[in-house]
Image (cartoon, rainbow over all chains, first blue to last red; front, side, top):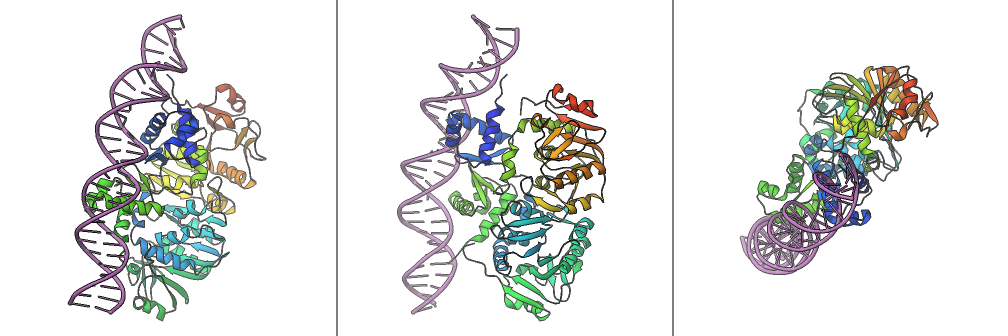
Length: 255
Length: 255
DNA sequence: CCGGATTTGCGCAAATTGCGCAATAATGGA
DNA sequence: TCCATTATTGCGCAATTTGCGCAAATCCGG
């Protein structure tokens, strides 16, 4: 019984190298497109790859969908907020990036820039790990699957060895006089520590978060902080009154 | 000028929810397949998704390919080793999973089982974070992009707060009398600490690693340890002579 | 040396995609 | 309020790709 796992392994390597079309693979291995198609069918059945029109790509991790499902919500608003926040940070700054999909959207924009990044946002790891100008430090600790971030004593212990120029964070809700709310004490405890260890605090929040007291645990905000939101100025007035600098994000029509 | 980001956001959410074919999406949104196709084309141009034959999937992170390129090398051997190692660990054990693609292959098999997992292997995070029976703890620290793992003082500090039943590790090379070799002192320092904090040590190594002194930094092995390899018994004899228990992995023809 | 099984290449029907075109719907300005 | 402009939508057709059956080639074990 002869099995040809060799060419299939080579196909996986070729796919990783960027060769994605059937004809190219057929030429590379000196076999007919039919044979390549059969190989791709085989690999596809094993969930190692996904077929495309005219080729294939490496299988997307089928597991990381729990957060991506929420990623779509308010996607354009989050993209606009992230873009506006990017204008606030200067090249070379050390940044703390908190968990949450809005901060994640911001982090994705950092590729190509030069920063030291400290984060507990696990979704950003594959994005920033191999970015040329980025030096990435991960805060360890217990993983919260629903938010794809870490928290707890280990994360705080690591953070106590570090300081940063700026914290970029978000929250389940913001309320004037109360601060940021989250579901667990672990999260707000870490958030408070992050605020202490950063020289300035920037909060990214879409309109749905403003004034929302959706969770029982609160992290108070420092005397001066920056709020980046796409909400109209009136909705953010209460925060400006108590020390927030307001940065307006305009959803670009091209999003 | 009217832009329809709304349906596109919804499409992303639907893709995350598992709806992947054009006709299904067309039915779900009450529009024609042509419209869905145009939406997918748009999202594909923005690299948010990848087109497949008859549908689309969420974009595979284009960044995490540096490691996947190596993933293909010795893929069948690694899969066999991972499967053999799985038989050694008992349900409920606390495991330390080190970096490296062989250990990663092992970690992927843990979904569906019940374990506490402590790891610096960043590639395993999306795999194990939302697995039902898995409690995941990440060791923080500086990220090594080439190996997609963390190391350094922060990782070691976190590990000093933890112990485990078993360590699963690998290396760039293994040599009798020397132990495991890696490229940097940071890595071997962490490896040594991992061995201290685990009650038993299991090394996963394909045949190409045995006897290879490819790197200058060495982590000595404990008096008793387990070697899982697909290499013939003769190649591993020198390790057995100095305290290793040998577990043979048989590459299944179906791989 | 030979039988059996696997793999390979090719042709054809079916499905999918891409593109042009006309109709519809919404937006901004007069 | 009305109109012109522009984006969006649905449909049909040509081009490409896929899936499948079948025959030839290849390889392995006895």
